Length: 214
Image: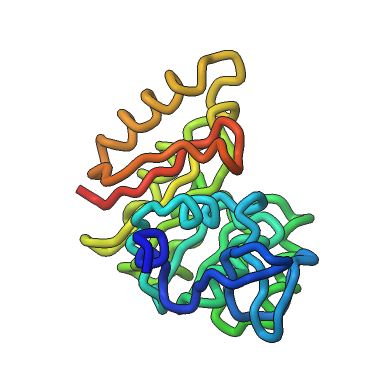
């Protein structure tokens, strides 16, 4: 078994689709992804968290975690998370994708859509249980480190932040490497940075970050 396979949580496997080995989870299809029986492709080209796993980052995910997912959009990635995780709270600010997200949640009893602004965690603190295992930050907005820090209150002491930092959301004119340095420095004020990896193989100008609360 490769190091990449060892870093996969229970419920996520590499399976062969169209003669190519790809990540997969068990659940009903959501976005037209290929399926093989109960298994469906987790397309790393459409999922930053999928890219982090595909690139072998040590996310700390083992399966059955309680997850708070920020920036759930229409549910592409968070549907896969709900396939292998426990209670999964999905925060999305835009009403249109939330309508799709609600449809995804109808087939997943553990997925809870929240039409909320991830920059204002006080608006959903009464819903999300304390001491979640994993905070996924996939909000493409200026101030991505601040969003993560504001939501750190929900993480248990040894929980994990899994962040996908989009350089162009911070500064479209700056060199992405400089943007990433600044964001990671800001994240380091609230989190211990465990690993960073560029996701350019799947997502241009994105950085994957694994961290835990200080």
